[in-house]
Image 1 (spheres, rainbow, N blue to C red):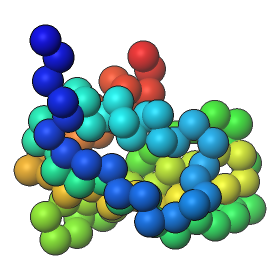
Image 2: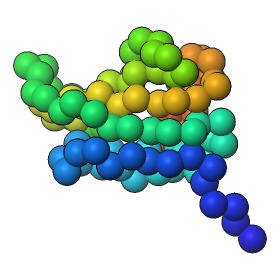
Image 3: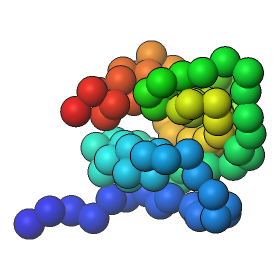
Image 4: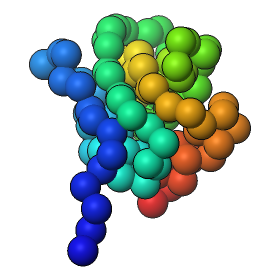
Length: 98
């Protein structure tokens, strides 16, 4: 029997980068040490990123801020976790490739 995810995905905004939410849901299912994922500010950038990328940006209290990019849009995502930065980067890379 599959276990429900231990963390939660907070829906603060009605707008998200296309494809971001399914990736974040996969990340929650695979990493039991993530307690909360909160997509935040969405904006436009000058550079173009043809496919969805997620980069660990800076540490915040209890976790990290991520920057998700696709096309000319970016979105900040806050992750509350006990994972260290390299482990979180590896988990994100794993979810994006599968």
